[in-house]
Amino acid sequence: METPHSFAARITASFALGCLKPKSRVLDVGAGDGAIAAAMLKGGLQVTAIDPNQAAVEKSTALGVNCFQIELEKFEHEEFDALLCSRSLHHMQPLDKAMAAAYRLLKPNGLLLVDDFGYERVDQKTAIWLFNLAQLIAAEEKPKKGKDEAAEKHRHGWLTAERHESNTLGPGHEQSEAISLWRHHHEIEHHVSSFERVKNALLDKFEIIEERRVPYLFHYLCDLLPHTKSGADRASLIYNWEKELAQVGGIEMCGARIIAIKA
Image (cartoon, rainbow, N blue to C red; front, side):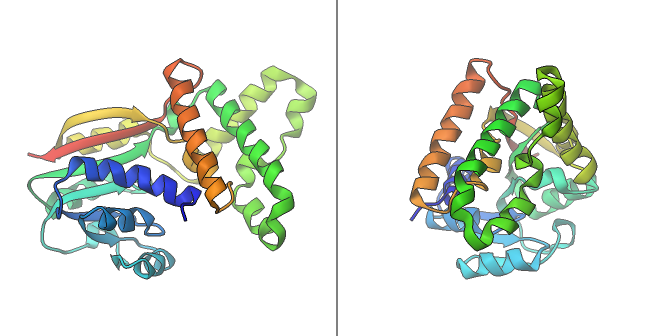
């Protein structure tokens, strides 16, 4: 049964599968729950994964993924045909060491596949769309959460907490509040690197052969949807809505994919 998480994993895995030949040897950097690595395995790639978090390694291993608990810079292995960095590079510090490790682990002419985002690309109208949609989903799902409601509320409190100030200070304040909360979460609380910073670090070691913008905000909303087939269907609708709305200028497309080659 597909869920919102497996839907999102399939979208990323499809990116890698579209770039690589069958049986290519791939390192999934920052495996998370292992869903992307498992989808790549199912698609015919030979996948190894790494993640510094023990719980992530356990979840990946349970899905049949060969996963190691280690940071990229410390990982020693024979060279891979490709590395996939999905939603991970923006957390890595220092970036130059991460890029040096990626370069070392790739075969000559190997590919570095990056599926990431630029938090700095989100403007006021985009933040308002995301926050309001997140709060709508949370309000719809709240009666169904039961015993897990408290954990979900804590995890996503920054997106779903009621913004009392906007009710009294008007629309202009609501806009500045939404973008301020977005920036505070990424810049202050999680020290996320901008996409341009990630890209500049990458260019020190690799040649970019393709770059394109893609939907990304749906990832946040997938976390709020029920882990059911109906939740996956709604995730698909949100993904397409984000893409179509960005294409006509309603919101910003903040996701980014890069295909880079080891020169």
